[in-house]
Length: 203
Image (cartoon, rainbow, N blue to C red; front, side, top):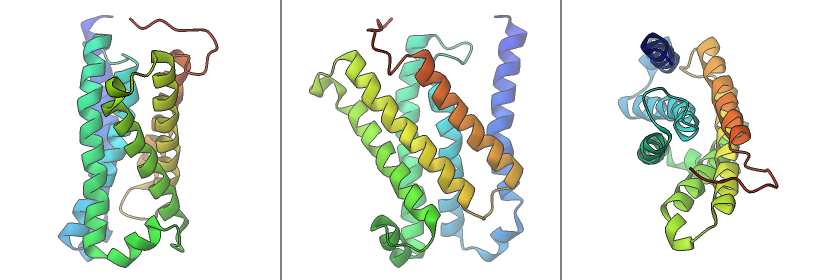
């Protein structure tokens, strides 16, 4: 791959990630929100952006990052993703504890809340599984199946959660980001042959 081609890929990725954030920053709805709520909201948008980056790193699709190095960055980015979700939920808890409790107990009247909780739970389980991988001594195929399955649940849940919310995110950029998150997750799962009956050798 040429240097120009590699540079273009990084530029396109940067634009795809930046546009939804800047579009949300220009939303007139921010004028009616307090700083903690705004921080929580943008933490959620940042988390969605990282959910696009994560499968690209895991699959070795980003130029300039060899597969092994990309997976190393993938682990650190995963930690940042979990932290962003914690900030997102924590900020919402500070602004309105009853709403967060209702969401966590699946009794919220807003459908997007349940999808958000499902996505959060799957994401935390995927991260926990990654942290305990060596202790659990899982076979590579078992690990890949479990981790990727949880990540796909988190991706689908996050996308539905985001699409159902009518908030600060601009509609077109939000839909585009959501579709890319799903496409990247499915692409990596297919390329890694997660559900293949044949054993895949790790590099």
